[in-house]
Amino acid sequence: MQATRVLQRAFPSWLLYTSLFIALISLTITNVPTPLDPLATVTLTYDANTQKQKSLYETDPFVYTNHSAIFFKDAEVVFQNSALSAEHIVVSSDGKRAYTGLRDGRIVYFHVENVHEGLVNFTRIGKDISLDSEKECGSPQDEAVCGRALGMAFASASLFDSYKSDLKSPSYYPGKQLLLVADAYRGLFLMDAKGKKTLLFDSVNNGTAFVKIKFLNSIAVATKRGVVYLTVTSSIFGRNQVILDVLKGEATGMLLEFNPKKKKITILKDKLCEPNGIVLTENEDFLLISLTNANKIIRYTISDQTIIDFAFAAGKSDNLEILKIQKPNHPPRDVLLIGVTSPHQKCLQWIWTDKTARKILYLLPSQFFMAYLRRVSSSFTIVDIETGDLMYVMVDPLKRNPFTSGVQKIGEYLYLTSWNHVSMLRVPLQAIQRL
Image (tube, one colour):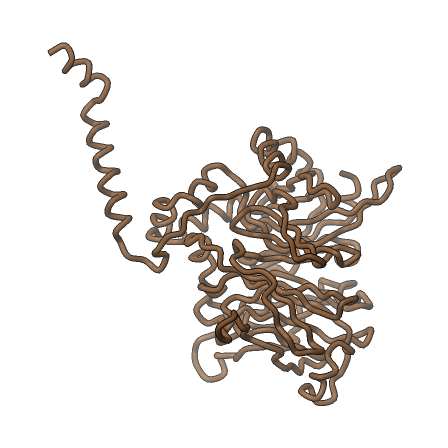
């Protein structure tokens, strides 16, 4: 009798009923079929220094974020309600025009010296569905038809001599360059200064057959080698299902090399954990690649095709940019700017990796979770380019650029872009020099 009372005090009925309810719910959820099945086991691994940076950040995040208010003090919202999920920006060699792609399929540009003139329509890769229906481009389900330009890069026209006839007497951008545009669904395009375009490729040989690329993302041009490097974020889901790709957790991404003179596409690495942004180091010896699902940056050595951890991203990393900064009375140094679409929080880390949590998140209305992310995701990370050490995590106190996809130097400003917002945020360049 005494033992029964002890057990009742240790395990009250409400606790037993709650535990039983949770067990039944978990069992039910596990057996509900979804597009995520079979759910991959997500185990995030880091080398010694990356793990050290992660642990230091988790121990005291304020050490890395305490400069944020000063940094964003003079920030300014630009292109309000018109920069529809502009993810990446590329600037012409004369520094006068900056181009970006929007979620409704348009490619637009703005004048660097006069951004208040607004965005100017340039062209589009996909179809404007409003021409023959009452619908308009802009919704995720229409992206494959309307087009979704992500990564862009200017390159010397001489690299593409074998494609110039396809453009029919192309007009060049300053510096006799042409524009490369990675459309998430349609492939890699070459575009001239009047918006004429030709498809370079949209599929890749996986060793057994040519397969259509599901989710093409970022571009880096190696001028010395005359090749183009690209990331394929997923081989299962398209860009409009990126949340499904994150929740499924399966490493199906690829790193590609495209040789335009030989018209050859090579898969350099596969089974990558959602590769996203990509940037070449100054001497073109290394590629830095963000692995969004792994919360880290990896370094790919071009000479021997090896991959090692480079940096902890303090969140789900997106686009990358190398920036040279110089503080007063200090020598210049290069840093890596990392767009962070979702911050590193222990609760989020559990959600992104636990099988049951990921399935629950899929079954719940997405707007609830996205609303939470919108409140916490206006940030980017600064990393030392030599060591990979975490230097700063900049979090805008006013949350003006949620789902930050990248940070890029344009003129005398740093521009923050977003994969899921309707404006950009810019910060005077001097803000980073005084950190």
